[in-house]
Amino acid sequence: MAVIGNEVLQFAQDHAPVDTGALRSSLRMERIEGNGQRVSVNVDYWLFPEYGTFAMAAQPYLRPALTATGMNIA
Picture 1 (cartoon, helix red, strand yellow):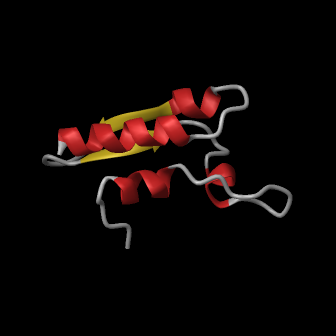
Picture 2 (picture 1 turned 90 degrees about the horizontal axis):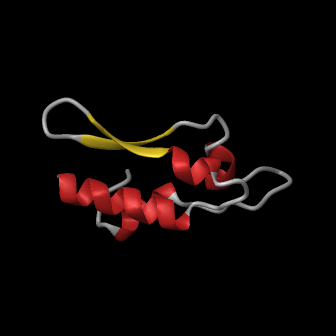
């Protein structure tokens, strides 16, 4: 799981939109119960680039990271 988790993190960092760099640098890998991992984003506005707003087109970086590494995002 660690290898896949790191692939997801790297892909998300590589594809996160950059204005100030805060979004990209806030992406972190966290260990969760058992052998699990999750990517966390430590800025409040993370969902705006991911899903877009009425004034801004979406620039997804998390969902494509999961898809590119073969993770199921049901």
